[in-house]
Length: 291
Image (cartoon, rainbow, N blue to C red):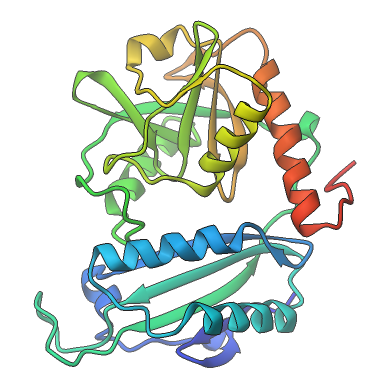
């Protein structure tokens, strides 16, 4: 594929893309973003992602400078020109460029950028590598429902995980309440019930999380959007994370302690199968993603 970028209406090679030095996203983290998975050249669940981008921008009082119809058209053209088959689309909106000050001057114009990159195609379920996780206190701000480009606490936690030989972090708040991962939502099967932290300002409500809950309910698994703590997590028979990039990823161990007897467990495996059917129906004309 051809890595391409779109910056406020202009397309260019990603390697040549530039934004102003005084863009408030670069100087102050004053912006929001979205990531959309591309399968077979098509964006998966585009409209929910665009809705969330709009919601995040509204929450921080940034006006997206283009209509949703305009953005959809530019996405379609960008994907066609990039010849991307398996990849992701990154979108970012900032408050714009101005002399550095916490208070944006009146008349500052918001800026929007997008780019497309390759991402490995899904492997068969048998080839999925379950991840290792560590638990870390959740010291982020209280508005995690906003998909903000301020990700330093997540970055620091991911580095801590890497130092421990793990791939993801499970954050927890006072009382040991597990919230989410650095880039994912967390599910656990506890006493036969699939549980995940409810929507609130403490988590980002993931699009994959939403799809997973829909599928689990369609399959008649007992599901509860109810927070669980670290003690309950220890006795979980299955744990998995969900995100746009990782899709549904089973967890093999947490803080060095194995999870369950088989990974992925039966519920997680069933969920992965049905999630991939969703992708195949929406993006691949019903054709199998792999195998």
